[in-house]
Amino acid sequence: MSLRIDKLSAAYGQARALWEVSIEVATGSVVGVLGRNGAGKTTLLRSIAGLHPRVEGSIVANGSEIRGLRADQVALKSVALVRESGRLPSSLSVSENLLLGQRLARLRGKPGRSLAEIWRWFPILEPLQERKAGLLSGGQRQALALASAFVAEPSILLLDEPSAGLAPPVARELFSVIGQLAGSGMTVLVVEQQPAWLIGLAQQCYLLEVGRVVDVGPVEKLIENAGSRLM
Ligand code: ATP
Image 1 (tube, rainbow, N blue to C red):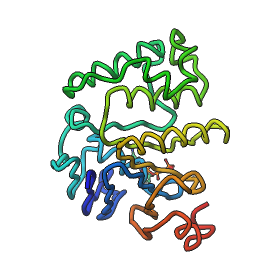
Image 2: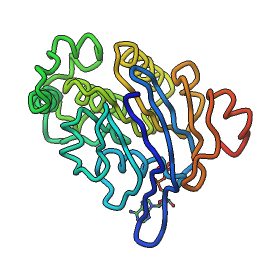
Image 3: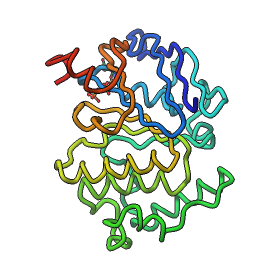
């Protein structure tokens, strides 16, 4: 098991956002987390990535406990968080963003993927090499965010609502790449508000409601059980 979250709880001041959440993601698989606005999906990913200060429970990544580590230390454990709407240094070009990722790869003791390989996985980025990230469209920015994580050769990818703000054909393209990344051995935990995107992609899904896991199973089963509570 490459990512095991056990009884994870997190709070903002006195307000709890997650209650004893347990999730398992096997190596090379895609696991989805579904939930409406405010369910705790982003807090979950931030907690794993070392960006949330008040977390209890256990988070084991590739066999080592990472709960309590800072974000930079978690990143060195080969865990990458791709945030919603692809937050990237906007004044850097596409290539410069990717070179930053290569630097992180070297800190992880890996060579980093070549730009030639990146263009093969993300062909839409190749003609945009010199464009500043701040001038990209939403879909291009999401692709660059994913590519910047991928270039640094993480073994675990955490994806925060990859479909957010994207036109369906653009999102479809992105989810197809995500499926191929998992096929190449990467472990993926993807948070989504729209369950349809996880059909055919995630082997297992967890439904979060007000900070608690209330259902686990294939996405079709969760949709059937939850009905309109998921929309
Ligand atoms: P969305 O889909 O809208 O991004 P989410 O499922 O990602 O929602 P979170 O953003 O994790 O949910 O929020 C979980 C709970 O924590 C919500 O009740 C939210 O109001 C609260 N919360 C989130 N960020 C903060 C913060 N900085 N301070 C206080 N409470 C917060």
